[in-house]
Image 1 (cartoon, rainbow, N blue to C red):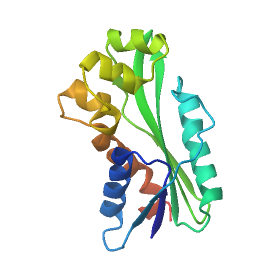
Image 2 (cartoon, one colour):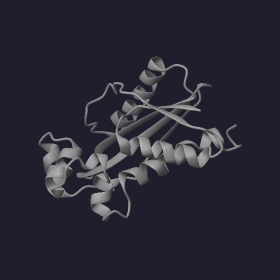
Image 3 (cartoon, rainbow, N blue to C red):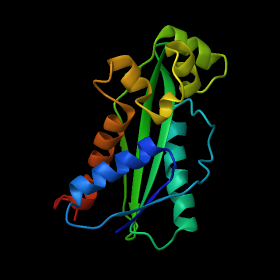
Image 4 (cartoon, rainbow, N blue to C red):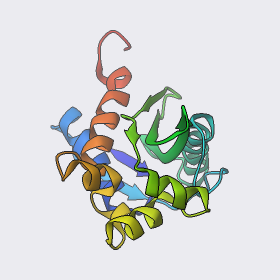
Length: 175
């Protein structure tokens, strides 16, 4: 099974691998990371923009690699809810039969200091690295790991979200 992942980020690739291996344990899964444009800001700042970024990544990946079985778009984003900055991600999965599934991850409240830095123009990963004195946290546990003491990580949340997005492809109620 050929699965195109619209990222070279090892956390995103690992999440896709785990979700697909859990759902398709008997199949050999070939993951193909590709760099494609999201068509949205580097740091999406709304639920709608984040979802559109994941959708655009899937469409661009399909054009770039049309012979895959699945294309996966992962887009992390931020939004303000009652003046509090929250982080989340959208996962979009399309298959060769033109079926599409979209699922949003859990929503993570961000601390005021991170919110100030993001408001000043930093991307979430850089803001987290400054506040938590880390390096390249987005390729590690991310904000989820930093704020939960590793109880949840970016990879674990993305794996869970992808597992939910795979339901329409594996559950008999959709097939």
